[in-house]
Image 1 (cartoon, one colour):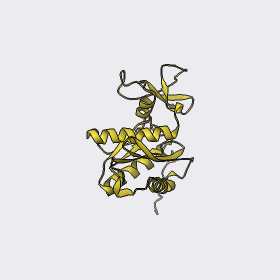
Image 2 (cartoon, rainbow, N blue to C red):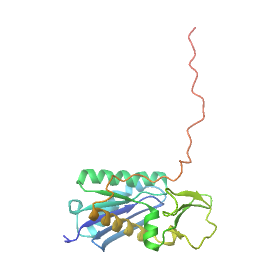
Image 3 (cartoon, one colour):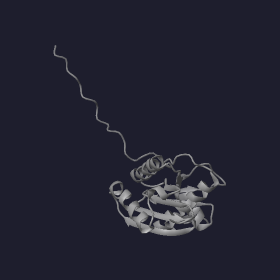
Image 4 (cartoon, rainbow, N blue to C red):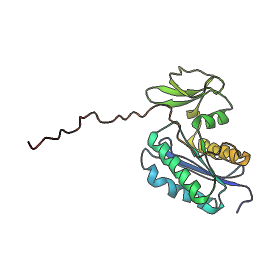
Length: 199
């Protein structure tokens, strides 16, 4: 078993399952599979494959990092709930890391944006705002786009940032989804059935 702390990072917030196992700064194993559905069934087997490739097992982990979005609502919930369950079961910390944070770290640029539906982006500037907004970017060159980096870049960064937070003992609240806007799905508008009297 490696002497450095082992952190397993994973992300299902987009149309993929991605996972990386880090021993300190060193990447031991990494996997990425494109998929539009089926992340719930594929995630844990993928994580077990990554652990096997890294020649380690669940009890050896020091912590977990998970992508919390923004992204696909269902995918985010799959990742976050898996991370929280593993954290409780293994007795190790789980850290949520946003796509804004990984993009900022990878690009070394504070202003970051994540592609959104309808040719918009989720935009975040930590120096000027408290939370991300949904807007049109219009090709601003001063903004780092998350899509400039691969899913494997992001998942390695998730694990690395989680490891740094665990080492500092900071921000170790259970991971929670980062939803920038409400879900597109709406409740049914059908009127409830009318119950007729026997009279």
